[in-house]
Image (cartoon, rainbow, N blue to C red; front, top):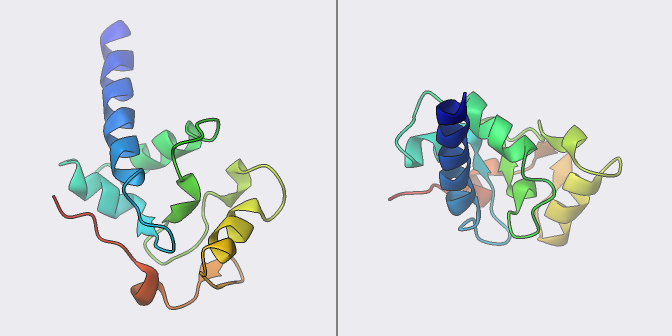
Length: 111
């Protein structure tokens, strides 16, 4: 079990390294992060990593949305609309839990 835990920790750290690069006022998707770290079919694992990051101050998890721009991780934030509030504070408009003008705000990690 230790080897699997170590593998997940390494995967999670690679995810967090990408998330830390997302510029203020931009968002990216679970799938884009997975692709950037060489694990294109692991978007769900990126979601698990994001769920585990909410106590980490230096990981802007609010900037990670699903491929359609939905705030799919919002229930993991304290408060009813904290994820939306954090995004709106960065100039991103959110309507019905979805990013408006996703193409304008989308950041593609390209390494």
